Image (tube, rainbow, N blue to C red):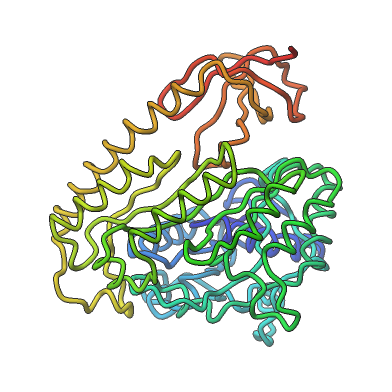
Length: 428
């Protein structure tokens, strides 16, 4: 078999469970599609651009597979857009959505889909990210943001119990994983659907007790549900980093209301002020959207003013996409794509200037970092500082380490290049 993962880290976790199930039942993993009897593409269906990438990838896999091999379309796009996949890629043999990923083996062997069963710590998993692993603590979402298809693709939130997640974390640590990135569609509401009404506070405390896990990172927190008890748990934890990813999407009240975000600019300002007051040295990442229906010049100016005031450490910006079936696609005041694009470029320029200033402020500081690889051309060690989430926040190039060093160590930041840092090992 051969597998390709598209989309977010949550999709990657799904692929790892698919691979774990197949490998533990006699399948063999290959490095290229032309060697495999089964090729699996775990698709993304969140945006039109992601769906096009999924189709393009399926077409590419179909053209490179050996004769007689079977092509599987799995995941988000397969869940909601099966008809489109079959129409555009007729050579797809099996389409398997997010609610039946563990049925792929059965379907390959001639069986049918069974009842929805989500993976847990008892299921084998092939981690594909080295010493970092994503821990998907819930699937689905109960919110109804106007632009988002996730609830219609994945359904209502389904959380995993704390003990099951702690068990998985222990298993990951036993294989050499040192950093866990906690992910969900809505991490803030983790556990509220469980009978014991547990929450993210209990999870943070549970993961703090897992030996071998040096860093725990929380991603995708909703801004309206971050209690002081969670901040206390982070501060008291031995391994939960003072790094929070809190997508806000916008900061103009009228746009936020149309988005159904249940937040206001004033509320966001108070939130980030409270977070920084309670967690010294906090690093904040967010996501912003330009071109949402009804985003006037004044509304965009409010967003720009907000980011200049809050000064996030890391930001991702994307343009609104009118997804079929979403409430936002039917809203009046649709913004022309070229206007949304120009606003994204302008916002990214402002954010780049803020980020550059903050990176310069880091020079001369001593921080925790981890080595991850060695650059083949220069022989230099490539790693990440604690404030850099994997895949999205750049890297740290570290002098004074060998290719055999892979534990968390102290480094001094000596410079920066674009979004990356330069550092040297610090033993002082």
